[in-house]
Length: 376
Image (cartoon, rainbow, N blue to C red):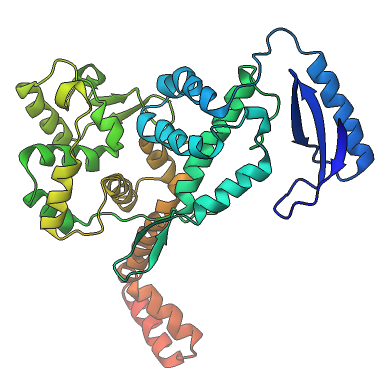
């Protein structure tokens, strides 16, 4: 037991590691220290902390044993899409970390998992080139892993998170595909009546697919014209005003009222899944690159082009940071530029005077000044 020097190629922990015993098991951790002296000081501090732990310590568990605890205690109560996100991610992560105790998992192991995940081939493109797992997909799983280790610390199963210094991959998530007015009409023309209602609500509210699926009649305030979203991705409640088109679509469904609880009920109490209908309409309309999430982009993009400020768009979308909304700012800037360009059309006479004077066209300038005096 003590500190030792490690020369692993993929190791980013400045090479000084320590080993000690906890609950009868040997544990290895990186000290994150550059010198042996500093590493020894850190080692004695850590051992002292562990020995002074109270009975609140839960004991070390394997990753596959803790994953269900995390899902039950945290993911299910707090995440709308926990089944398609956290549960799905942990199924894959169990294959890599499942047999390890939480305290055995190191940053080097996680870095190795990130590298292998990034090199995973998922399909081939139309040109026959291999397509790999995107940085965004890896980052979603890494975020889940980080949260799991943080909860393990909070609940007394672990001391230090091996994810603390693992950085997310750089990703390009600035895709802002949105529908033009002509494309909106084309899509609606090839949609069923129910899909038209869904489509109208999504492009007029900017709701996520999951938020629409979980919408309840009690969340709608027709008197005030507001939709309350209480199960959101960020966990924060937000309210969206109804446009007339949205109100009409919801009132039509209210008359049918296929469910006492859900606005869009599915089979056997499950959320309504309209993906198949969406794909059919998309193909018929010839919109091959369109995704359901692009309807949210359509809402935000047309808001910006109508002159809405970026902070209002952020609040309506429910973004946790302004950085996420700034992808639409170029649309606002474009329309500002268009508005300023109109100034030249409204003030052509003043522009001519200015140019004539600057270019030394004295005769033309004198004519303009004379005409101005004669008009007085």
